[in-house]
Image: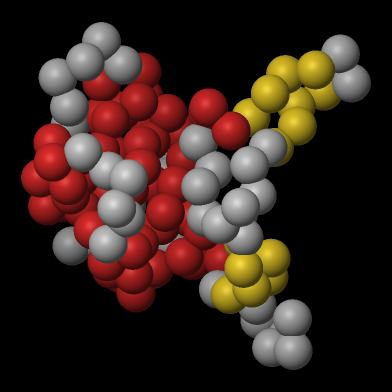
Length: 117
């Protein structure tokens, strides 16, 4: 990237996009990758996990635990990163109505756990 603070961002990093191979973990599905602030990548992962954590599936508890681990050191997460992640998720045409409706609660959970609010 031309900006020295920018990095290559995955923008869809969650457990389904990590494959465990005999040579170690591999991140797959780089279709959303772009250059930008690492805070956005952290925000996207946090929001995706929080959407599952506030849901009603059996994965809510494990997602909350994983979100807690991600946010144990929230130093790379910013309010701007969370806000942009929420905007991008809201504009994602592949999300279900339930996923879209969960964004407010998911954002609150991320902000609370990261102590941004």
